[in-house]
Length: 243
Image 1 (cartoon, rainbow, N blue to C red):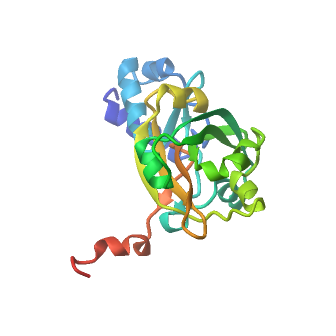
Image 2: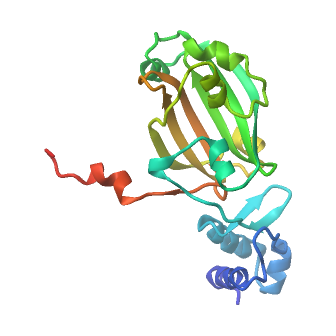
């Protein structure tokens, strides 16, 4: 057995029968190459094919691991990270690792309803589940909520909670979900390999009166989050022209 497809199929069987349980580190690529009497490159191709299907994950300095399961959110019920984690019975935390003030870009100005170049606050926050970094959040905040955001400690448990306490009620906004490759900065913050697949959620956060407070991009490691699509979530997209 030395074809990469056959190797992948055999490793998948070992995962299914529990020989390689969830969270288990697989033997090294060299050890697998010796076992299957093939080259390390062919083993890596087999492992990469399983990673693309979500069965394995590769982590720097840790090798290949069987992915842990995760509970999906529905597209129509996207929620705050801390609430999502709590509903899974998992411990979440977050830390702001970078803050900066700068002029709003054309896109930010249009979405936030402010002038081009008007000062906004941007931050980068790393979110964790059970102590593991699983998401990096990059947010741009409208000028009128900057005092609230700027006063937050780096380890604030909930930004939306702080806004709510300040009388700013934030609702679910628009979301765009797509697959992207990890940048060098993503790789450093999330402890994944550069170009590893990430799940990106681009979103906006409006108040109850429709005023946007945030334009953000969240990037999740591939084994930490999933989103289910229900018929009702996409029904408006299926209407005939003119309806």
